[in-house]
Length: 536
Ligand SMILES: Nc1nc2c(c(=O)[nH]1)N[C@H]1C(S)=C(S)[C@@H](COP(=O)(O)O)O[C@H]1N2
Ligand SMILES: [Mo]
Image 1 (cartoon, rainbow, N blue to C red):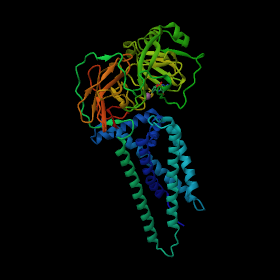
Image 2: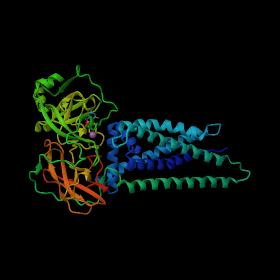
Image 3: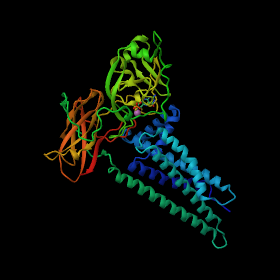
Image 4: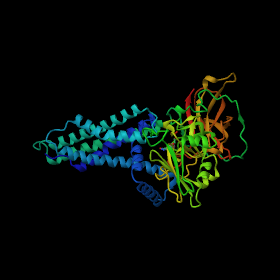
């Protein structure tokens, strides 16, 4: 009795994995579920040695250049294609492997139980990987877990079913059907299977693309022309501007502040025994306890907005709180940096690290070792006992749970920089609509629209709102909590019922407009004009 071999298994692997990818894509676009191929790719980028990852990225860039493609525009899609390609190749490998395994059985394959087993064996590691690296899903952990496992079990049952079908065909007694007819049957089955998977894949991906702009919570506009810069001037802000109802809190409660790091659980550090060591190219090696930091140095307070570089336009990986600590300049002065010292290598308890230029520290007294958020010691999740604050940079440059600082001569890429993210990670201007507050309609039939705008240390000079194809209209700005925080804005819109699309854009303190380029977060932060469609 002839059975389908490893090559057929590989082919089937691709055929059943393609719809799996497409369905994950639908889940991602429509419901904010994790998109597994990117999670696996991110995880690989993280566990592979930095050298290999950098080499991979270099190769990718070179291939794009060889094809005369604009790297800035295509690198990210190339990476996405690579991630999906790797998933399909893994499917092919698994197909070859399980077909070979199943071929060694004496008895008939039980499609359901074998499918379930294969689904769990592959799905559980994938689930763990997704939990540890996913930064984009908006669904809760349980929903995401059920989705990942259920899809993998379904995928594996499809595998087993196809295997069974192909073995049946092979096992058909050749008394009635000729050998060539059997092969036709198998070929026909494969063609049908191919057509079916192609259909699911195309319809799924198409559906996701067609519907994604209708996702609740808004999206990014693709066809808004870039604004011209305006002349810099002091922004006109209003101290007691009442935000439109539904605008997020101007000051983020610590327990609502986003949390992003490479750990499923925050590293636990004993405050009593912890001490920060400062060594390397210094005249004086320091060992500072929390009390030393609190008592020996002048405390410094800065209310500031922090954003993750992985934040999508309109995403919630951004928050504002009051940071308290010690200017890094005072500490470096105490350590008497050697003239050969050029960089500060900061190590965290979780293996995270970042490298800061001493000239950057010397030029900016706001760079701070932070021990309190919201006037309370840092929580474990947010970096207890000590984290760095650097104005104008995304969170990836700012280690939490610091245990060690070393002055070194040579630059090295930090944790995320080594993994292909931007070396400087300077925040990009962004603005978001939080609400169209129909319930606040006034006697003049005006409905306040509100949200935030943020451009790091440059501040916000102007925010404008556009409704449908109308003109851009200036919004009012609430005086920000500091010049390092986002700005709450409000625009009173002459209400018209019906379905409308609302857009927002901002200009930073230098008069530069936010970019209309639609960019994903990788490698240097997302950009694009936020828009939201509402039926009113
Ligand atoms: N030790 C350590 N520090 C870290 C990280 C990390 O993974 N480990 N993640 C960084 C990233 S990517 C961000 S966005 C911020 C998030 O800080 P938060 O979780 O307090 O909001 O922490 C940064 N500091
Ligand atoms: Mo981040």
